[in-house]
Structures are given as C-alpha cells and as structure tokens.
Image (cartoon, rainbow, N blue to C red; front, side):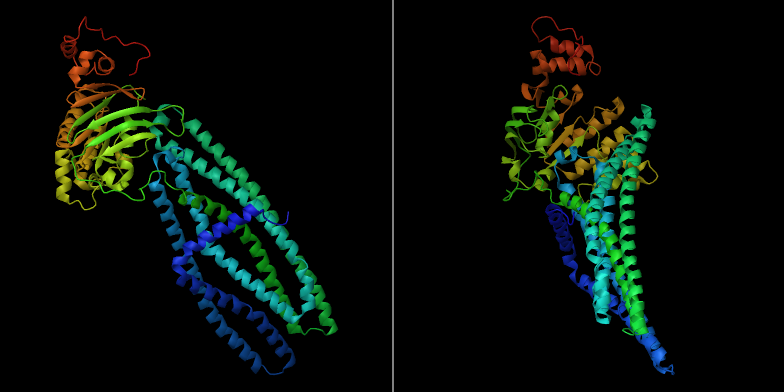
Amino acid sequence: MSDLPDEGKSRNIGVLRRLIGLVRPHLGRFALAVATLLAASGLSLVYPMAAKYAIDVGMSSKSSVELDRIVLGLLALFVFHSGLVWVRHYSMSWLGERVVADLRALVVDRVLLLPMAWFHERRTGELVGRLASDVTTVENTVGSELSQALRNGVQLIGGLSLLLWVDWRLTAMMLLVIPPLLLITLWFGREIRLMSKRVQDEMAQVSGHIQESIGAIQTVQAFVREPREGRRYRDGVERIFQETLRMVRWRASFFAGAMGAGYLAVAAMIWLGGRALIRGDLSSGELTAFFLYTFMVAGALADLAGLWSALQRAAGATERLFAIIDTTPEIRDPEAPVPLPPGGGALELRGVTFTYASRPTQPVLEHVDLTVAPGQVIALVGPSGAGKSTILSLLFRFYDVTGGEVRLEGVDVRRLRLAELRRAMALVAQEPVLFSGTIRDNIAYGRDDATQAQVERAARDANAHDFVTSFPDGYDTVIGERGVKLSGGQKQRIAIARALLADPRVLVLDEATSNLDSESEAQVQQALARLMKGRTTVVVAHRLSTVRDADRILVIDHGRVVEQGRHAELMAQAGVYRRLVEHQVIADEPAPELAAAGAAVPGPTPTPTPTPGEPS
C-alpha cells in the first residue's frame, strides 16, 4: 500500500484548508512566523559549511587569524539565530493559541444554536470531551508540530541541495533509501490516524459516562451503584489503554524502522565518504560537512516521520470538530424574517400535528387547535405522555410542527427571528435550571442591562428578597452548580424573579409547583399570581390549586384535545378531567370540593377509587 486512499487524501486536504481558513485572519502574524522560521532554518544550514571551512583552514594554515574570524562570525550568527528562533517560537505559539481559541468559540457558538433533538442524541460529557481532547490535539499541531514540520522540511530540502553540491555521487547513493521511507511513512501514518480516532472516540464515550454518573451522584449512591459505575469506568479506561498500547506499538515500530533505515544510510555514507577521502576526491572539511548535512537530513526525515503521524491524529480531531461547526441547525432564523407585531401575547395553534424524528410512526400531537387571547390563562392537563410539554416546546420553537401552525400575535413562529420569539416568552419549569454564579446573576440572566434596583424589585415580587437578604452575602451569594445550595422553593422563586425581570408577553409554567411542600407552594403561588397578572399564561399542571382559576382548561389525551372549559364545567362533565382530579388532586382537595362539584352531575357521585393502569 503506497499511498492513502483518495477519500483519505481529500479529507485531509479538506481539513488542512479549514485550518488555513482559521489562520487567514492572522496572516500578518503567520507571515512573520514563517519568515523567521525560514530564516532560522536557513541559517542552521550554514553551520556544517562553516565547519568545512574551519577544518580546511585549520589543516592548511599555520596561522589562527582566519580561523578566529570564522569562529567570531559564527558567534555573531549564533546570537542572531537565537533571536530568530525566539520570534519564530513566540509567533507560532501565539498563532496556535489564537487558532484554538477561535476554534473553541466556533464550536461552542454552533453547539448553542443546535436544536433540542441534536442534544437528545448526544451526551454532554462527550461534547465536553471533544472540546478538551480534540481541541488540544489541534493546538499542538498548529502551535508546535506545524512549525517543526516546516523547519524540518526546509532542512531536508536545503540539506539535500548542499549534499548534491558537495558530492553528487554520495548523495545519489543516500537518496536510494528515501522513497521507500516516504512510502512507509504514508502507510504507517494512515494506520496511526485510524487508531488515534478510535482512541479519541472511546475517550469521549468514557468521559460522557463518568460525567453522567457524577452529575447523578445522589442517585448512584442511593441505589448503591458505585461499584457498577466504577467498574464501567475502569473497563472503558482499560479499553483505551489497550487501544493506545496498540497504537504505541505501531508508532514505536514506525519510529524504529524509519530511524534505523536513516542511520543505516548514514553508516553507508561514512564508509563511502572515507573511501573518497582516501582517494583524494574530498577534503577533510568537505567530508565533515557532508557527514553533518547527512545527519541533518536523516534527523529531519526521522522527525517528519513522527510529525506525519501527529498530523494524522490532528486531522481526525479537526474533522470531528468541523463536523460540529458545519452542522446546519434545523431550527433557525428564516431567510426573510417578519418583525414581531406589538401585542399582548395572542397565541394560536392551528391544526398542529407533531411527530418526533426518532419515532416517525407515533404522532405526539394530532390536529390540536387552541386560541389564547392576550392576558388569558390557559391550563393544559392530561395524563403523562399526552403531549402537554410538547406543546410548550412548540411555542418556544424548540421543535417545528410536523403539520399546522403555531402563531404568536397572528404570525407563524417559523417566520419570526428566534431571539425575538423567545424574548417574548418566559419559562418557569418544574425543575428550574440555575447556574453556579450568584443569585444576582441568575435573576438578571435574561437582562444584561438590569440594575440592582430592578433585580431587587423582581426578587420582592417573587417573594425571594427576604430569604436572599438573610444570607451573609445577600445577592452576591454563590448558589453552586444548578443551585444546589438552595431549597426547591427558593430555586423556584429565583426562577420566577428571573421571569419577572425578563418581562415577557407570554408566561409558560411547566409544573412549576408540583415538587414543593405546602408552605413553599403558597409562597410560590403568591409570586406566580404577580407574574401572571396582565400576561398571557400557559400552565401545565396536575394540582387543582394551580389550574382551577384558569380562564380555560384544555384536557390533552393521546395527543388530542378531548375536553375544554372552566374547572366547574369540566367537573360537571364527569369525563377525563374529573377522573384526573379524583386521582391526582384528591390528596390536596378535601371531599367537600368533589361533593360540591358532584352535586351538579346527574346520578350518583363516582367513588374516587383508583383503577389499576390509569394515568397518575
């Protein structure tokens, strides 16, 4: 096998072009780095020739004056050469760090724009692993290995040229070993690249597993799964170790073979050169220069062999990173966006049908119609898996409808800019996502320009100010990852304050009080009442206290709207809604509530006995 397959070559060329594209904005720095690299590498070719003259002068002259001049000239050259090396090293290192910073930013910018479906197919740990390991590989390539490759390339070409000038016959003999070495280099390089890709993929998978386990450490310990998780991690690390060893064996064989062949060539040159010296075809200085250039060429060739495998590893890492960068988000701004009209948050779903791409034969929603006037409170209830949360995702355009339309202020959301659509809404979820910064940062997350007074006003309206100021650091309190230092009710009120400060037209509440105790729920309900005032609100909830005062309640079952009306109307119908109330809210609502509602129902009041298999 003499070369890389056409597909592999074109892929590597494509990766190289993309890296050059990242370097292009910094062409000035790149030109300086290359110029100093060429100058420094060119100067290194002078030293063997200087040694030639020094030896010939020393052997032919009885005076040391000329030799002293040669040495002084070399000392001055050494100083100048050192300066060039410093500039070259700094420039290439700067360039490598700059390219890596730009590459990281490109990857993260793209990842943050990708739709929810993309993340559902990948683990967070795997993505973090890619940013860590793959980007580091690229950093080493651009900042160090590329520089070494260019330097060795100059020394190889320059050294061969000077060898031909010193003695072309000896050089021709030496060149007999170079083509086989190049072919071996290409073949080994391809195999090492494939092995490196497998190691990187396995490493990303293992990183994903352990990050997932650490992120759910409470569950892991609660179910006593520490041995299992530790064993799974060790097994993954062992697979990486064995695959790495295999790659190391190949690389060791590669280096040993390449260097062995190179130094066999050097030994042959010493033998042939010695015979030429005996015959008088070469002077002592010329033979010395020839040997020095031969060592230089052999060293450059050996280094290039190692660098080729490193460049192959970088090609695999870069390819994976650019695969993320090149991903086109399915959910994105339209080509000709329509400005969001002024309004109070009018919502409409027209014949909405939705199917997840992973389950194309199982529709989640079928022909859902919904009209919400500005300022209305609409509650969505139904058994788990009925499609309630999917409707909320469609409102934010986390997914696009399969059929029908979702409209805000009379405009199809697919015609609006994503930022404009989502700024008009705010979400308070069952498990509010808080960040590891301060309370102030979390409340002001949606408003970069928020003042301290605005943050505090939002916290007061969310019933959060009192407990915030009870902390020693107040609004500067660091709450830990995902707000672990706060209780459930406190986290929920911080999330409500964040939504208040965002001042949305449409408020979306997804089970916002389902995980709270009675006291926390009362405080959160007061805060929600302030937040909902004058805003269009869509509520997903099971608790009667959350939905009974809604302007309209929609009962979703198997992806369809099966009932709608106010609380009392739906209770009187004795349908799905009443059954859900009996089964899900009976613990929160006393029997008189049900009895009063049941009085309007013809016939005897149903006995609230749970039936096996019914939704809970």
